[in-house]
Length: 383
Picture 1: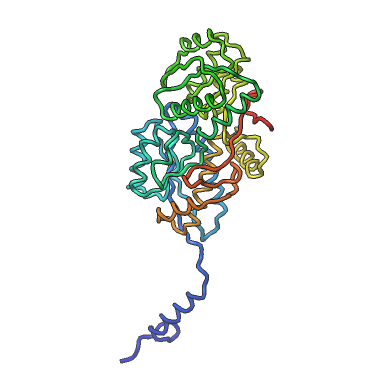
Picture 2: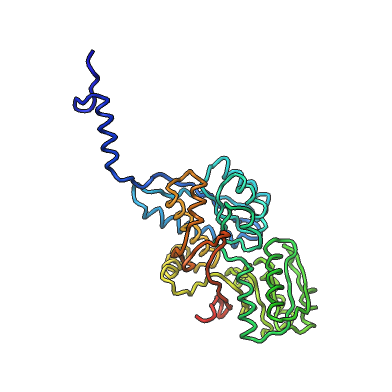
């Protein structure tokens, strides 16, 4: 019986051996294909202003990556879904992404209250989550698959309070906060702790709920106490109403309004108008940063969308770049554990947020800034 012949007359066993030898001489190529990234964002509901900015920032990063990866490298297949600013819808989207879409990593959700309901699902399934706006206490403590790009209020707020005390010498404040949301309650806790550490007296604590429109009872009481400043932990819809009504009720501009991360949206300035002038808010990013990557981002975002980006867009943009770096380092579009481990190893990565690393607890390690609304835009102190 004649032996079967392979390529150019070589016997099949010899052909197989030769092929293996040749393969061993070729350097391993970059793995190709697409990586599925699920984006859970508040595109409708009370936090739609944040979600829209996040989607725009994320898509800009996706477009840049996919246009420059080359033929054989991995591209991003983004899958966007709306959590409608509610925990239950967020849960539905997480389950879809994990079980049906088989995403390698989830970016989002927008709100901390939603994250506290959804992230345990991903943790149990072993799917990495990268938070791009969750700042409440306890997010990364959910488990070792949970990371965040956004600086927590526990980091940003103390820096803001200290800077305001030093600049204005405030001694007493009134505090307003939303008592039905994880983010706003966490912001209140961070403010209360920081105010105490800086020997600033709280003369009044007022609460409200998401969806409230009339804040005159709380603000009227605050006005009678003559505080040096008003500290507010609120999402942007309620924040806009509080700022506008405070000035209409005659609380003078010299009584500064100090906001938490929920104030970090152009929607505040748009909705509150001139009343927003002088509002102070802590942040992890400012549009005027001279970081070259940030300047390129601001230019590209403004060109694409016709408006300057906000912090939520910047963090989403950075989040996509960080997630992609983790996938690239992991060498897999499917191995969720490998992606998680690669995320944990990110150190000193150049981003629009500056040099970025994850702490041992998977929180962002970067520097906060203090912003003030001046002439209709957020301006960083010291810029």
